Length: 173
Image (cartoon, rainbow, N blue to C red; front, side, top):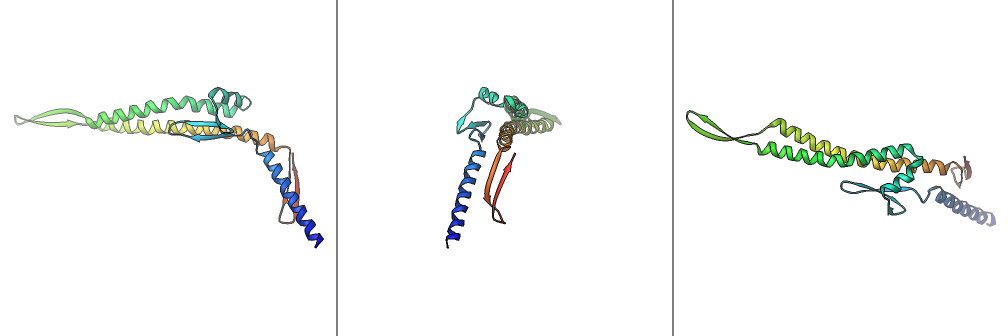
């Protein structure tokens, strides 16, 4: 009976130590992203970051910096492209009033441009893709930063826990 109690106590100690070590591995300074309609905001510990503070965090991470800068450069381009596509498609649908004279009789009709309509649809889709791609780049920049942070923190960790064979201890450098 004492041996079983001793094993239970040891198991509980190993579980509590492993939770403490795992809590230390997941750093408090990881970035989270929140997607809004057109933009993606980056948060650190629940507070939104400015562009300047994000770039200062990314100084050591070249990939994250490049993705973030490209994402912010593409975002303002997507909205006017999409709005221009909507305007072009609306103009094509509205058409131009024309009058045809056949056998001395006037027949009014509307001439609509199919190429203008198709180009407008392409521009709307392209603008939406630019907006979405810019948001994805901003999200990937935060992921790259978190990945580098995890690699830096996980190089020197110790793991304690229960495995299939019993209690396991591991050290990762």
